[in-house]
Image (cartoon, rainbow, N blue to C red; front, side, top):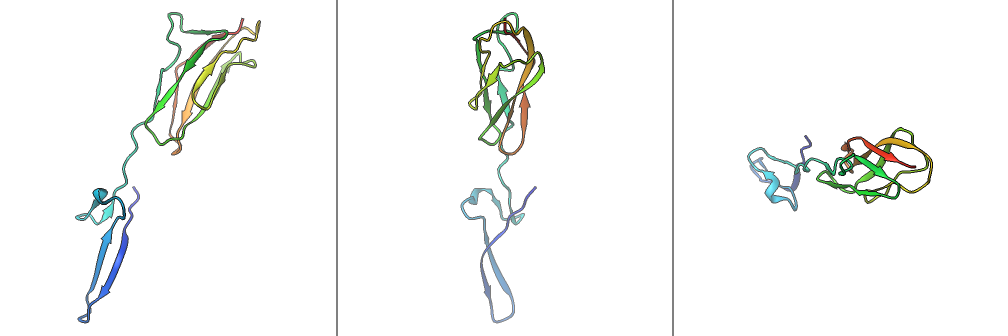
Length: 134
């Protein structure tokens, strides 16, 4: 836990006492005068939705897409694919979370996961995604 104390003024009184005035600049509602320090806000937990394909057979077929979204954490988010098996030239994930199983014909089946990481380094990984490139 980081603590921030900003000294905004120091006045030396002739009797030898020092008077220190403290403030946390713009975040006056987050400054705890009793504790004497700034308590930064905690970012909400990073979440990912959906957790994987939403169809009945839990597959992504040639040309299909899944729009993943991240919430919470500390934006911006970084998206990446974690290959598990059978990764050919596809699928792809864009920097806005769009998973695409591009048509390539005949590459077979494979599995992967989608991972999103926020600015603070927190990450969440999707469930297993099975894709069919045939």
